[in-house]
Length: 96
Image (tube, rainbow, N blue to C red):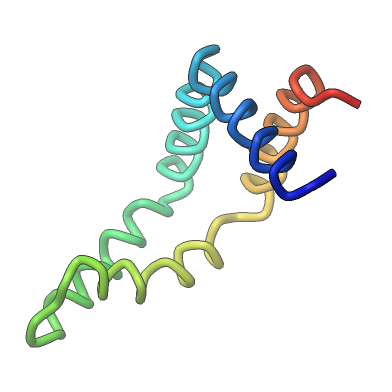
């Protein structure tokens, strides 16, 4: 599969995700799960701390500092659940 083929397949998957409503469904599921375990509160506290303690914080600087920590503290069971849902979706979309 060429790079062009891969890019085309990615675009097709994204189109189907959005058009089918599955993107919103997955996004809402993830948002809800992260909220339930307190992840969003933790990220809000981290962002507030960065903004409060830096002389001139910028949006991009705050994101750059938060993103690695945010990814690290997503509970494994949530990662597993969302990946299973994505894999299930892909089985129906990606040709074999």
